[in-house]
Length: 86
Image 1 (cartoon, rainbow, N blue to C red):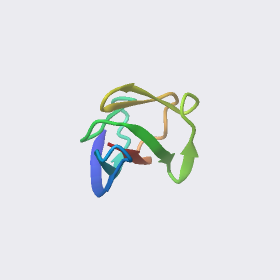
Image 2: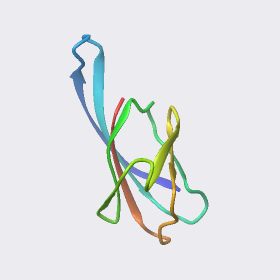
Image 3: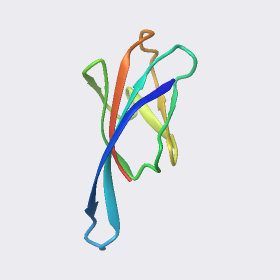
Image 4: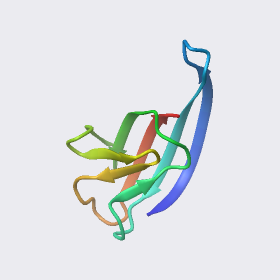
């Protein structure tokens, strides 16, 4: 899996803790169904595969602080976009 792009914006939670909204794009290469993000995941806002939004625990699950496991195998070359809070 190749990490293609990353963009982020910074915000603050009510507790005054900094919060970042991060967008990362991956291209599925057939090697692994697990994506590793560049930052820890507080919560996922959205995950899409080729523009189709997946639902948590149906299309993907958060398997670790910085890992997302896809529950189905996309086609090779599929573009995967993730927006998450960190």
